[in-house]
Amino acid sequence: MSKKLNIDPINNWIKKDNDPLIISGPCSAETYDQLYETCKQLKSHGINLMRAGVWKPRTRPGTFEGNGEEALKWISDIKKELGVQFAVEVANTNHIELSLKYGIDILWIGARTTVNPFSVQEIADSVKGTDTPILVKNPINPDLSLWMGALERINKAGIKKLGAIHRGFSMTGSSKYRYVPLWKIAIDLKSNLPNLPVICDPSHICGNREMIFETSQKALDLGYDGLIIESHIDPDNAWSDAKQQVTPEVLSKMKSDLKTKNSNEEDKSYNHLLNEIRESIDDVDKEIIDVISKRIELVEKIGEFKKEQDLTTFQVDRWNEIFKSRLDWALEKGLDKDFIEDLYKVIHLGSINVQNKIINKKKANFKI
Image (tube, rainbow, N blue to C red):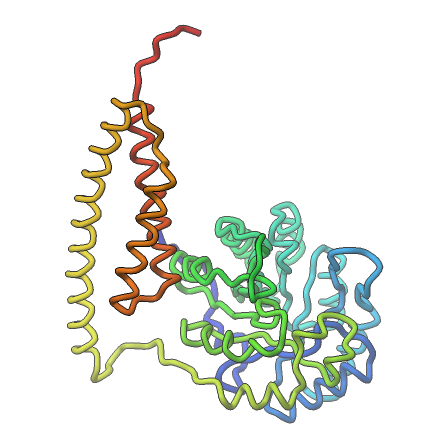
């Protein structure tokens, strides 16, 4: 069920000098010269909202963990010199106090902080009475409730200038992504909180600069409100996350090649045709529900039979047969292989759950 947070539209608190909205800057504020030159070049390419890592929560100790308050002093000077805005990550009350002291324009809560409601509540308590915009990254593990809970805590503290950053999730197994995007979770977030601005972080999702453009375009195709992309004057020699940063020149080329989509359907000449197609989709979906209902009836019959014969619900040979044959049928229709694989895994799991309920529906013949 969707709900509306008490928040201001993003256009009221972030000045969009470019379309799409892009927040950019180095992963880490390494030195004054590195930060200044990066921001100067970004500004020359029409980007006026910078990001910079001041405190770096590294997975393991012994690597560069940020310059702290010294970096905030650099940022304060660069803001005055170049006339730009800055966003930084905060994780505790001390970070917030220092950031506000040096005039940071936007704060964001990182993935490793979002995962901890105690830390989020500490931040919420610290920002009460302020008007500073806050962006909340998704938790590092795929948990929609944690993400929504963090946003709700910050909003309840009186922060109306609020948004989310989708930076991907830590998953086991191999993937072409550094942090798997799991787009469905971000879409579910937007469905639950429809007035919430959502910004994509393709740098962290990809973990390499080669995939940033395609991931950025996908986010815009899905109606995201903007992008946060790491940029560095010399990315190969960056002190942190070198592989996922791009030069300001490369970012400028990306910006010009990215295509934004119109999400507003009001007063458009194509609305009549669009509604006709949607009505047809509604009819097809009703047919799908009818077919699923019939399939469940058959699954229930199988469950009753397995119960009588004392058979297990999961039989690997039958599953392999279903998986292969349905995939073959789908490929003949030109359907996407990954989509059908995911679909039938869900269908099969649902079938097993139905059968388990039938088989386990027994009267207890013992007393405790």
